[in-house]
Length: 428
Ligand code: NAD
Image (cartoon, rainbow, N blue to C red; front, side):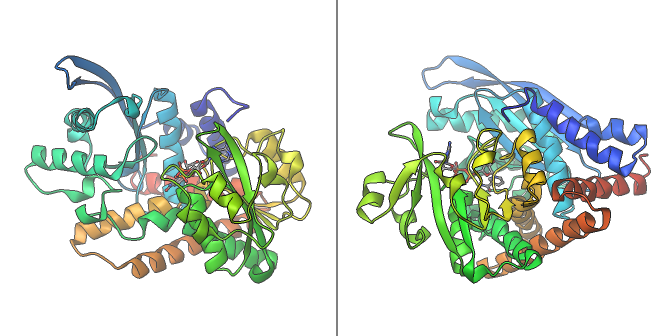
């Protein structure tokens, strides 16, 4: 986020606020302000030309009070231990608010994966597992893909773990390809999950979905399925979507007088979520600059691109008609902008509730791996709907009971659940 330097300090501050509202004792705060376990290691990788490069890797297990740690592995050149710590803590709250029996973890490697060949990537993935295999597993810590990592990489990692264990263990990683133990429905899970919570929020606010208009930022995995869900499931209209245009190196907003057709736009969008501008224009789409999405006359705003996009500069452009913000992205709203949104009384579905559909379906993947029996897509999505709907109402109830903002209510629900497990286990 633009207004803070260190993501871990920010995560700690957010926790402190929740801890204060809950009146938590010192020893509980100490345990949860810091990760339970941290691993920092070197991964030597033999490169294709024969020389060896050494990469730095991390795994942080913030909490396993409610079950095995859960969270992605990022391959990113700017990865630091503090980013990984913050993300691991946020995973603890996300799993708790979604009420899945998992804790929070995150991992990373300081690397730009685009700089590696396919075989070098495979050796790096296997090297990560060689360092961590004794401390991960379906009953300990279950990593998944994230920024810079892919389902194929999870398949290599699962294979390496299986070799070292001497036992086929698909449930050690989630986000695997569907042909290798992955779950159907994972691709659409996060975007559809956003829409399940939007549907419930609209019921609460008395907004008729058939007359509702949404403005969406982004057109990647989350935004695509949020747009499809808003149109197909709710019968609403999507005023615009946006994307970062890779050839022009700048973002654009795409709108259409009749509402955008997400199915059509998908046919002219590449794997990175970039819409073909010329084809969109030819189909009657209006192409505007990056900030136009937030100015649209809409009932619902769905930031589903990057962190920090609703900030002190853009928040003032939110149209007076907007009654609901559904945070599809992680951390899309800066602290300053959040204050403005609160004052304007716009109902917010906070990120770790709104976008929990992805991790919930990852949990379903490990459940199916354990059973060695696989559900159909409809069954996965139906179970996802039940989980997201329940999670939304738990947070709404807390918000109404304690008369607090939805983001604070989500922290209260999540922290309280983790602390209850810690107490039951006799830790504190
Ligand atoms: P993605 O890479 O598939 O898509 C990102 C989209 O945002 C692309 O369309 C890109 O062009 C667009 N974009 C980038 N910069 C932009 C800008 N400045 N203005 C407008 N558009 C811009 O990513 P994703 O998987 O859809 O993830 C989006 C967000 O949701 C991230 O914050 C991610 O951490 C979060 N998230 C994703 C998942 C998941 O399952 N994919 C789960 C939870 C949270």
